[in-house]
Image 1 (spheres, protein in one colour):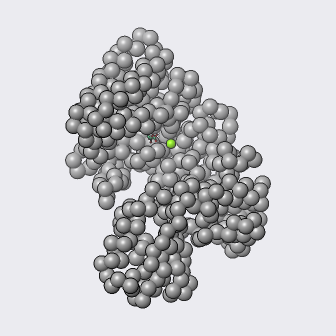
Image 2 (cartoon, rainbow, N blue to C red):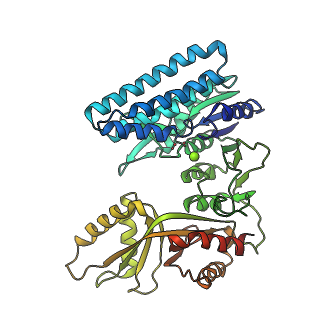
Image 3 (cartoon, rainbow, N blue to C red):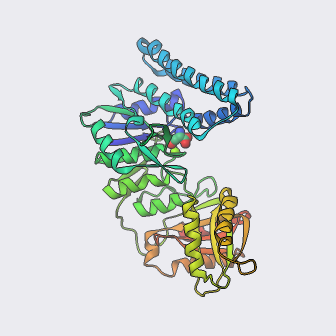
Amino acid sequence: MKVLKFGGTSVGTVASLTNVKQIVENQDEPVIVVVSALGGVTDMLINAARTAASGSNDWRPIYDKILSRHQDVVFGLVPESRQEEVWEHVRLLLHRLRDFYRGVELVEDLSARVLCRIVSFGERLSSYIVSHIIEGAVHFDSLRFIKTENWFGRNIAVTELTNNLVRKEFADFSGPVAIVPGFISTDRDNGDITNLGRGGSDYTAAIIAAALDASMLEIWTDVDGFMTADPRVIGSARVIPHLSFLESMDLCNFGAKVIYPPTIYPVFHKNIPIRILNTFHTDAPGTLITDAHHVPVSQPFRGVSSISDVALIEIVPAPGFTASALRTRTLNVLSKKGIEVLLSTTPVGDNDTIRFGIRGTALRQSEEALREDMLGECEEGSRPRMTHTCNVSTVTLVGENLKTDTGAACRMLDVLVAAGMAPLADAPGDSGFAYTAVIPADSLTKALALLHTRFLE
Ligand code: ASP
Ligand code: MG
């Protein structure tokens, strides 16, 4: 049994869904198909909700657009004999959605809980429709079996419980096709509708694949696979035919937008291969991700990824705060707030300045949390000094051979320095398979081009 996941662009239009139908109906073993909302619909659902919360009824044209997108697909692809019946159900769901918007507009308030309920309509609608487009398909509702718990304000999948529920739900499934909404879930304690975070349909698919020991997880998307660099920036970027789990994890964590980073963990632990495939280019072999692969030692890097809009926080140690103690403490504070640290430099001496790269959007919250933590303990004047630099980017080279080729990171830095782009900070990733440099945002394109030419062509 395989698990296939189709993203928003794959299920976005009548034309793309025609490809999906063909791909799924051509499978020769039972498949579980996880689908995203129709492309762009999640954004529209959120925009309309925020508009309604401001007391404006301008959510209506957005809602009308959502309605017509679904109507096109129902009347374009559901067999004629069942169109009315399917549309009736879709209309009911859409009317419920409209009621939510009316309510939000009336009270001019949008809680996280209500927003979760509103965004869930995207996948509820798409999965229901797709289950009536693909022959022999049966709909399974992830709200029943993907469970989350609240962790510092975020919804985190509860692995054990979810695995058991998934196994129970699919115990009698023998094919040919199960259709499952991605992304959406429910809270284990109060049953509220939650979700796995933006892009989370990949994660739903991985959780199901791991729970059921699937033979393969296929992520069907709109690109040919993982690339050596972002092809919109680097014209000569190539598809990477084979990656290890850890390499793909690092490429994603450091900016490659091919899959949602948490996706890799569940299948990695079960050693289930992932294949990235293109719904619009079904002949392309894509990228295969497995636990091991053989790359010549002379090739330390497999790909380069980057993140724009990064902020760099610098903290200068003070008496009573050695650099390494300060680093541990800072990492703890940020982790408790659920703030992702993209890189952190390792101090050598007690007085070394420590540097953290975080997303620019998390800067204010990070500084507040750090200030609060350090203020509690020390007198004015003996506090570690904290400054930040905005508008920087991270550029990361990834490859398992980096672990054995100890000079590779230096060669990367040399290339940047020689081109007048001395990094503001640099550090290895936790896995040891990635090396990241922080550079001014306006140098990013040049840095990517240089590193790609030097190491990946
Ligand atoms: N529809 C959700 C989103 O746009 C989940 C997904 O597509 O994976 O974030
Ligand atoms: Mg996605």
